Length: 417
Image 1: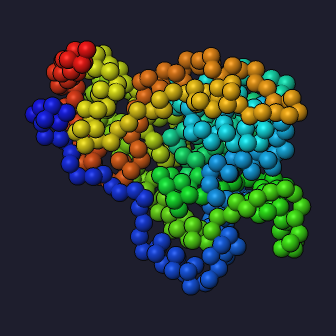
Image 2: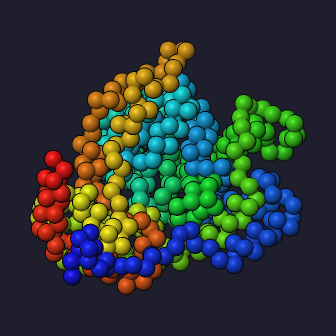
Image 3: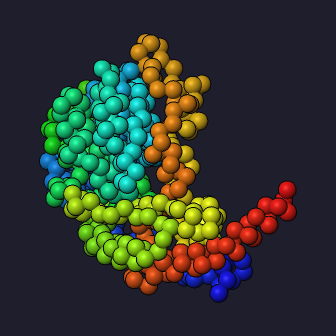
């Protein structure tokens, strides 16, 4: 059978499981908030959800907010980040990890990643620390926890705050301990594609009562719990989550463990079968990761196993077969236009400066994964083994016809020239 990209029948024509997933629980809880007429951030359902989320992650405190970017921002503000303070971040992450630092007048310092996990390399973090460093933001990329033993040890030894950006890692555990509790604070996102979602939303978890009070105040117009409605203590904003969002998230949280189990089972089946297919590398499990929710599955592409077909052409062929695989980020975060010299924030006090030249920066592992990385999204693994088999069949089909695919591509390129 010829490739779908060359007019053949695609391997798969039916969609993968729909996302977001919802059911009667969401509908009933939404109706409950609707009838209560208390729809805003002071709905009792918000505190109930916060308590449930804190319990799931073994944290003393959880404070909801309007999105994951704000969660990072208020966590940094609660740490009293000052203008010019440096915060070490990875370059393979969503832009919010770095821009939250800049919004708080801090300086993002990019450190390279571990090529297997795509998380911050502890060795690179150690090398990036200067006298101006105040914090480390460890992203648990794709749901795989960063090396929390090493990063926490560095933070403690160097007197730095550790914030866990766990936007991808709802319910993940490291050595049996839930992520988000290893440092000063952990932040999560409930954006539309996340493992628990209300379309938007975020949360900060912490074991520090002082930090929790400050985060709550930043999210609630500078008020203090127990204080007056018109009594404000700090310059802050209204970042509250609504009762409707909390209702949806309460239902989402209930089904998260079962969904995680389904993904884990299907990913392990995929991993086992993939060992018989050359050209796509999936790192082996790290035994320290005791619960991996598999928000993203990152494969490393080896073109030599596909007759020299480059990654992007391989992806076009795979997508034509009905498999929604995609390339990783097009470039590391520091190559975004906002990090050009003319785009950097002005500083009146003269303290904001970056010792990294973002425009000339090149971190090898981060650059490499942008060229050979492929992502499979979490919903692909929420179905059954037939779904996984279709992914594998499509990969094998593209490899079988890789020579013809390359010839077609070269002929098309020749005709354009």
